[in-house]
Image (cartoon, rainbow, N blue to C red; front, top):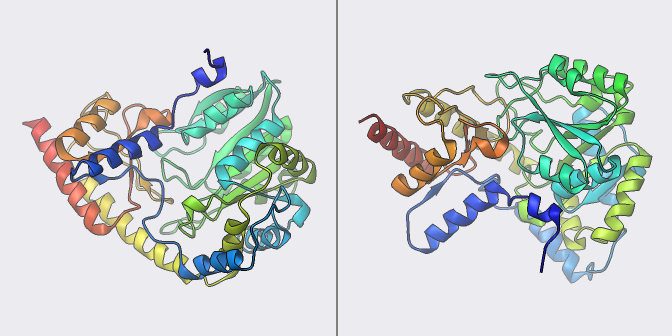
Length: 388
């Protein structure tokens, strides 16, 4: 039987494919170090697990409202206000099955078939496919290399009457770039001028290094908030990737439309996971501080090691837990580079082509310092063999 043209046009997630390949090698007894995972290696904090356990014991196992429970919406609104200074009513919040579903639902709510969604490149692998599934066309606009900052002139040239939205991701996966308040303010002027939606993915907002600071496009201009959806999640900040709880904050009409879509697609987010997420947002935040300290140490170490490797060029990541070095001078085929490194040295990276950036590789440092050190040793050996 034939499948739809839509599904045939959508490739599998490259990052999940890498993870599956690594897991298969590990099950076969191979010693593999994976820098492909986009999730913290820390366990979910005990207080969160205990809250979910209590929810089960209390019988909180039935349907909730399609858009999530009100206390969790309020907790998310409180965290947004504390971090960004933006106030939202609970009617302006939606709880989804991870930030990924919130993003996909938002695009469906914003776009008609044939509309365009601007996606700065390099981009997270799922953005283009989300646009396609909504019947929209992804339009890629390159970020300014090598810093990967916003190119405001190029973005304005890409806007036309079919443009409905632009997706912003800061801190960025895969580049680690944190957009400045000034750059976001310039972009906000474009969004307001052309009356399009800004969808801002801020799941790494807690993880910013050095003198850098996180800013949201929703907060840089008094007029932009009514055209913006702020998306976040408990996944990265509280090491809850498998719990699948994300949230979006935006205008009531957009949130209402997203709620109607979600009601038909999934009913509601997992009730037990919502209680865990409520504890994550309202409870002890010391686990976040521990993670930030560990990631800072890992980032400093991996940048130092990569900076000494011949042929590797990289910008120091300002946020998130990825480095995105250019390896094109060593091997223009980034897929071939990653495949050879995995087969010869047992080190897994993600090719930059998966993010719209041929010649680059994404290296996640969401793993232990010991594994990072061993992985860098193996990568050095791999590069020496190539030189020889």
